[in-house]
Every structure is written in structure tokens, then in C-alpha cells.
Length: 289
Image (cartoon, rainbow, N blue to C red):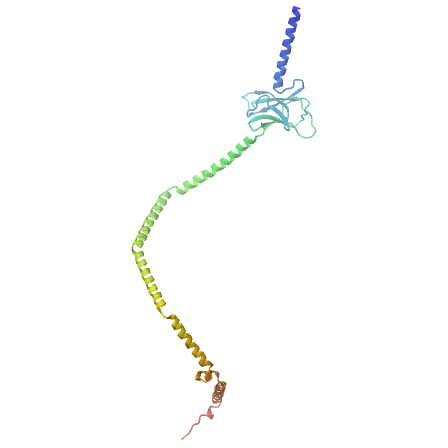
């Protein structure tokens, strides 16, 4: 009976140890009942990768980082051992890629497996590379832009120093002083013009306005309507005289007989002049004594 109690206590201890071991691996994400295959990769730096970090194939979790060993006397100081399911087919040409896991800066391992048939690998060392995450890409792009901006600023400063080097600053200051002096003289001339000439011009303009007002007043006082009426009456009398056949002006303008006589006289005079030019001897007689 005594031995049976000791046996029970031993069995209970074994079960507790087994449960503790199983629980630790379960919490680490390792299925101890599943066969495991191990692969190794070497890195110069791991960027915060830790043990128990996940291992993905095309985004699917197939294992975890089992162990990280380091030897800082070597260039590839870190040796990463990953454990994945033994049933995962890993052919030749596969590689381990250190990638970002989420936006919080975590790291994970991505197994890149080539498409097609190939000889399967056992427990072997895989080629490795590091793929920068979103934050690293942004930092690199930002640093590139910062370097470019710094280069432009440096060129601008160099150009300004070249423009202002030597005696150019003194020349610029001298030109500014001369421009300031010219502006002062111009300001004084404007003040004198404002105080002396502008009042005279204003007085002249006032006199001209007064004269114009006087002329307008005289025009208003003149009997323009009477003058226009007299002019209208005169024009009417002339029109009546031109239309009347009894007045001299009407006879001259309206008599067709007078027009015909005048036209006949002009025609006769023209014929006479033509005949005189053609036969001058007919009208000019010479007497010899």
C-alpha cells in the first residue's frame, strides 16, 4: 500500500512534467505531435527578429523561428534556425527572406519557394536576403529626398557666396546708398513742387473756371431764340423769292428762255473762238501804206 502511494505520486509528477512541457511548446506555437524539419539561414543583422517569430509561405504560417545563434566575430553574425512542418515541400532554389510583420515593426521569416518541380531539401542551409518593409522604404525615400534638398541648398548657398564674394557686397551697398540719395532728392523736389507750383496752378485753374462761368452766363443772357427766329425768317424769304416767277431772282432761276439764250450765246462764242483760231487772217487785216 505504501509503494502504491509512491507510484501514484511519481506518475502524477511525470504527468505534470509532460503537461508543463507540452504547454510551453503549445504556447510557443509548436505542435510536438507533428514531425518537424529544420532549416538554417545566416544574416549580417536581424533587425529585431526574435525567437518564436512566425515563418510564412505566401502569407500562410507554416512554422516559427526555433533558435537564434550569434557570433559577432564573423560578418554573418546571426544564424537563424527555423522549424516548419515536415510535410511542407521545400525544393532547391528556395530562400529565407527577413520581412516586416505588420506595421508595429515586428519581423518574420518568409520562405520563398520557386514554382515547378525540384529536388526536395532536407535539413539544409538556405540562401537569405532582407526585404525592407513599408517603414524602411519610406525612410529610404525620405532620406533620398532630404539628400537631394540638402544638395540643392548647398548649391544655392555656394551660388550666393559666389555672387556676394569679394567687393560685390560693398558695390551693392554703395548702389543702395546712391539710390537712397536719389530718392531723397526726388522727394525734396516733389515737396517744393507741391508747396510752390501747385498753388499757382490751382489759382490759374480757378481763374479759367471763373472766365468760363462768365462766358456761360453771357450765353444764357443772349437772345438766342430771337436770332434763330430772324435767321429762319430770312431763309423763308429767300426760298419764296427763288420760287416766285415775278421776282428777278425767280426769273433768273425759273425762266427756261433765259437759260436757252445763255446756252446759245455760249455755244456761239465757242464756235467763234474756234473759227478765230483756225482762220485768224479772216478777222485781222493788215494795211500797207
